[in-house]
Length: 319
Image (cartoon, rainbow, N blue to C red; front, side, top):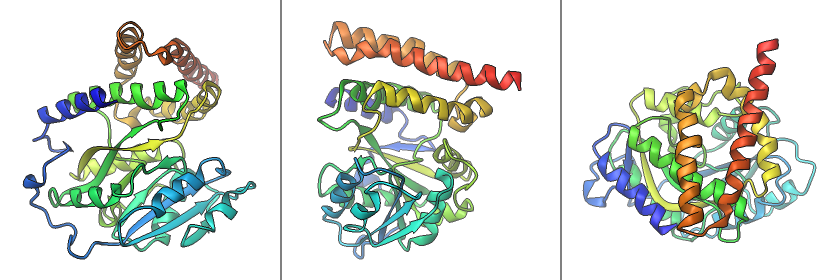
């Protein structure tokens, strides 16, 4: 992972003057005053949930372990039927209910929170060390047009081989490509936001489920806001198995086929290039040089994603 993080850093150095994304800036470059570092602002952790008993406790424990002095935890639950609520009650400051789309839950969280900074996290995110938040918040002062502090995501140390492939290796490869070409939208989900920037774009679209985070990231970019990327990672404990990944492809396909990947800010060509060229190169390197056999899953990952998107596309053609 250290080698891949260095690649991300090197890519960022070439684009440090870019008007959208800034990668790991040094404190000497800061000239903004979005936040008062002598009186640290309230950070509201807004976490949508629905039947997440397997992951929510680790997420909330990692938030409670932060050395940051001023936080609140807002749970936005979609009518869970498992132990999610009973777990959340041990850690959260407020539980509200919204059984609508992901975008609707995020907007409900925004409206229910009080923080100057909004930490929009999924319930399967784990903050790996107690100083993460207090190190991340000062990056809002890079300049006064920063809306978001966007961290690297990696699979947790105990992740399955498939999770490491999808959440660490492919994520690094695809993000390096998008950052180097200045394509796509960044700093959507699992990111820190200034509340005022989300209010500037009129809040979060309640009508969008899959891809809502890309949509609000696009509107932030369109208003000229900047994203600061930091390589201090969050653990994303998701897509543990190929079966979980396969099921989710059909949900995402409905949204992204309709928009022809417009919500992601990518062309169909770029999607194919990432999967067929960059991913294949990564697989060859991973198997022959790194001897990381999680890459054996890659042909199945690509085939299943293309099958799901092709199936949904053909189904919509017949309607």
